Length: 490
Picture (tube, rainbow, N blue to C red):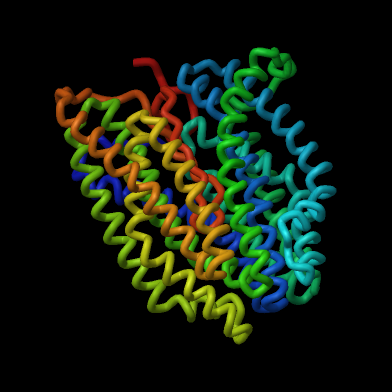
C-alpha cells in the first residue's frame, strides 16, 4: 500500500515509514537467528561454526535468487500501473518460466558443488561434514526459495506490501518450531535445521499460491498467457540479471571474508557467526531507516519539494547517528550476555571473540547509519553512479582489510574490516550528498498536488552487515483501494 511522504514533519514521516520496513527486515533475520540459537544450544559450538561456515555460500544463492525475482517483478508493476491486465499475466508467466528454469539448475547443480566449494573456501576439516550436509539440503530447497521470493515480489508489485510480510512471519514462526522439533526431539542435527527452513519456505509458497487463487483473479493465467515471446524473455532478463549479479558480487565479498575466517579455525568461525547474528538486528534498524529515506527522497523529488528533501535528509542523518551511538552502546554493554543466548556455557574463547566483534562494530554504527541514509537519499534522487561506486569501495575495503589485517593480527583484523569499509564509503558519500544538497537548494519549490509515482523499497537477504537492497523508481501508479482491483479512471 503506497503512503504519501510529501506532507508532515520530515523526521516523523521517515521514522513512521521505516517501522514496517524494520518489521520485515527483523522477521527476515529471525530465520538465521533461530537456527543459530537452537543449533548452538543443542548441538554445540562446533555445529554452530559448521552452519556459520555455510553462510556466505548460501548468501550467494539467496542474493542471486532475490535479485533475479525482484527484477522479474518490475514489468508486472509497470503493467499494473498501466492497467494492462493481459501484460500483467504475460509478465507473470514469463517470470514463472524463468524462475522455474533457474530453480531446476540450482537444485540439480548446487548440491553437487557444495562440498568442493566449501573445500575451496578452506573450511576447517572438523566442520566439513556438517557444513556440507547443511549446504546440500539448503540448495535442494532452492525452488522453494526462488518461488517464495518471486510470489512475494509479484504481490508487492501490485500494491500489497502487507501480505508478503504476513506470510514471511508465518514462515519464520513455522521455521522456529520445526528447527526445535528436528534438532531437539528428532535429533536430525544440522540437516534438520536446514530442512526446517526449506519446509517453512515451501509452506509459504503454498500460502502465496492460495492467496493468489482466492484474492487475485487478475493473476490467474490462461493458455494464451503462456505464449511467451523472445522479447518478453529478454526484457525480464534485462531487469533481473543485473540485480541478481549485483547481489552476487556483494556475496563474493562475504565469501572472501569467510576464507579469512576459515584460516583462523573453528572458534573464529563460531565467534563471527554468533556476532553476525546479533549484529544483524542492529543493522536491520539502520538499513530500514536508509530505505525509508530513499522512498522519502523519491516521492518528494516527484512532488517537487526539494526543501523537504534537504530538511528530511539532515534530520534522518542525525537520527541515524544517534541510533548508531545508542545501538553501539547497548551491544558494547550487553554483547556478552547476548552471545551466551546462542552457545550457553560453551567456549569462553568464542564468547570473548564474538563480544570483541560487537564492540568493534558498535563503535562504527554511527558511520553505518550515515552510509545507509546518504546512499538512500542519492538513490531516491535517481543518482546511480556514486551509490554503486561506494558499494564497490565498501566491498574492496572489507575484503582487503579481512585478508591483510586477518593475516597480520588475526580475528581482530577480520572484525575491523566492517567499520573500515563503512568509513571508506562515507568518505565519498558525504561530499557527493553535499553537492546534491546544494543543487536541491537552487531548485524552485513547485509542490505538485499529488504524485502518481512511488518508489518500491525491496529488502533483500543479509549476512551480518552485508545488506542487499534496492529502490525501484519506475512509474508505478499508486494503488489506494483495499481490494486489489484496477484503480478507477477519474
